[in-house]
Length: 403
Image (tube, rainbow, N blue to C red; front, side, top):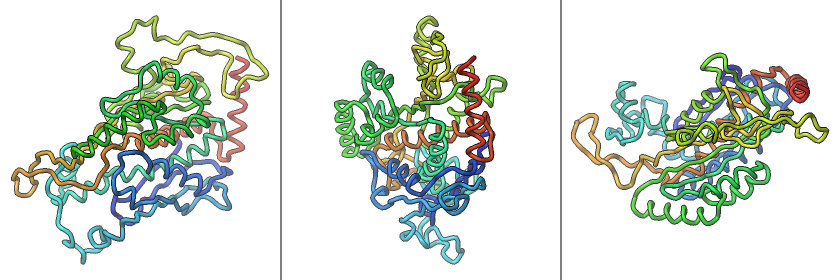
């Protein structure tokens, strides 16, 4: 990111998760209620494991906010791990507690376990798995909630939904209908009411049945989800260098989500099967109108195969990011592995985990999209205070409407 500075810290069974976000302008109204609402959405979803029954995530704002408004200084957040009570000695920072629990020496296939142990010269894999755990995503969502609140000041809203779990996928016809009619404020209420966050009720029921079967078999499931950002103005990102292309930055952010193994913007991989005449979004002009939506330009497209980004820049259409999450590699039906100390073959150790976390991954995707787009907004419009950023934004929007 070019403007926003982000960092998270904390282990899965440590005392807490900590996150810092810097460069959010002053004057933005934010509260723990805004953050906690997003944290609750992350914890929901059919197929989650026992950890979600223990944790009831709540954020604490440690700095950067006074009397409900941001100060322009770094915002520090803390989310306590309630499970810490069971790990006070096992995850203690004090040397006197060394050896209070047995080391983990059997790496799980598909995890960071073995690579991390080799890289950091660790004989106890817990020193790797605690940080590589998806528990860290709770802080990603908390920081993303701040970014979402910022973007809402510019009528930019972000939502998500699940399109596939295992071999069960919503039909392309139904998906297109839903995507074309997607309005974050209206659509998210229905989506969040679904146990698997799927917009099609019949498909959702089949997904739930498949998750039940996987749980019974000691197996896990991955799937696909989509994130949509509406109200995004044209001109965010840039074509002039590879690392300033917004589609590239978004792809990196999504690939940084634990267990995500594939990302596409708009039609993405489907381009490979089509002629150019089928997938390019033709451009039209309607002229300025008094009732024109705030974030629209006089130029528009009737299709959105590009997912709102052309040449690394937003084009005024909704930004659509699609991602694939692999099945969770922690299985009750263990896979074969090799002990890193004895070098003897073993069945991989089981850590408490989920059967399916695709609905949660979609919410995490929203957070990452919000952080990237907020950074792009600040890069484009600047401003140390929210009022200054809004003035710059309004000036640009007046310009593009008259272009």
